[in-house]
Length: 91
Image (cartoon, rainbow, N blue to C red):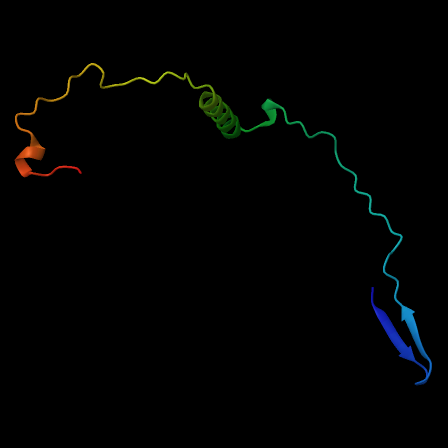
């Protein structure tokens, strides 16, 4: 709100107030046909949506078992102890 001070003379100042609100309403009508049928989509959009749904479902449905790919292999044979050879030890 802005107040404007208008003075007719110096002894008697009068304060007037500008209107701040209006009594107008804005009504927007919308459509109710927001659901899109699978047949209305382009083939590229169908491919994208099916790929996205498949990837997202596989992301959430993890098996929970971790496999060790190196379990069948033995570690390499060391001919020399490298730490002793170079005299480097962790302290």
